Amino acid sequence: MTTNMAERSRTAETGSDIGGDDIIAGNVSKYTVLPAGYCGQPKKGHLIFDACFESGNLGRVDHITEFEYDLFIRPDTCNPRFRVWFNFTVENVKESQHRSMVETNAGILNQINQVGLKHKFLLRVIFNVVNFSKTKSLYRDGMAPMVKSTSRPKWQRIPSKNVYYYHCPDHRKNYVMSFAFCFDREDDTYQFAYCYPYTYTRLQHYLDNLQRRNMDYFCRELLGLSVQRRQLDLLTITSPANLRPGAEQKVVFITARVHPGETPSSFVCQGIIDFLVSQHPIAKVLRDHLVFKIAPMLNPDGVYLGNYRCSLMGFDLNRHWANPSPWAHPTLHGVKQLIIEMYNNPSSTSFNRDAVKAGTGRRFLGGLLNDTSYCYTLEVSFYSYIVAGTTTAVPYTEEAYMKLGRNVARTFLDYYRLNSLVERPLAPTPKTRKEKEPLFKGATPQGQGTGQVGSKLEKRNQTHPKDQSLPTQ
Image (cartoon, rainbow, N blue to C red; front, side, top):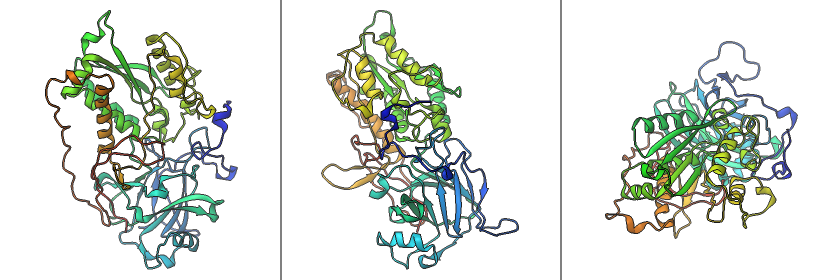
């Protein structure tokens, strides 16, 4: 297996190698963490960790004390340089288990004191994620992990006051993200994740439901299969008249989830689809005048496996558009062949020629298509967006990501100058269900708003309505 110079470069975005003693082969599976030297049956409070489920990721757990654990992210399959995404469950918890900070590990105490935490602060358990491959992280700017439990299944953000991101001398001076959490219900299983998960199975259920509606302007077809034989779905959304022989229409081609850990893209893509198949007057005009082709999940194997950036075989697919292999990169190969069939006039692109981006979708497709075609990349933050005219960061929710997608779909009306064709005054986008009050202790509701596109994957984002929070005092 070979990689080009751009892919081998070690940056804050792409990751770095790890030592052989840290190599982790798979996820923990119902792993009970016991104190050193403990004999006998596990008891309440001996936490059980599990990540052997779809999109799960947790490779190792080290017991520090009853109230502190070091967590190791499992690297992407066949590529140890990428360690960012995590998604795991914890059960067999002990209710109201807490201790003063002065009784916990001195190393973590010293680190957390540097960010101003006082000794009198009480906590339940501290989790330290110790082997991130990236140094730049929104955890420095207020981002927090997601959490839900069996009795409270709505994902919520842990309060940012309980999250700390710092250099740790105990772990080769790597960056460590620590968060404090209280378990308030012994019968619950708690699940933690880097960002809102969006699985391959969830997409399949969503597309199955759309297909059952038998809309004449919606078509789902199988464009190909991944290495592990998962579906590469292709959606066509347009008025049937646009597909008749001889009809000439502009085509909008949308792809998402080339990097499996970038879950916001799936929510945004679903928002786009939801709007385009709706009865909104703008959606009807768009279907009448445009043909939308959407491949909503380019890396289904990586998504299923819980990788952050790579496919099953360790490839960063967004660096292989130039020459995708039909056996190693079958999803890219299928999409590329379709685009070549649709556009058969190659030309060159005049922007963004830096070597690090060689082989990306934007660079390659911008060069493949003719000079009447345009390629854009929409990057959305894992965390938040900035309210216009302020410096306030508003965290995203699932609904806010999808609202962003709906708003992106509406912009095609302006882009193609179709505004005059909307027959009646624009109705506001239907409101979603009213959010309930937070169900977890120490939780703070989050704001609502509409936003614009973020700049870098791990930079601040945009839209977000209210979300429920969890117990993390």
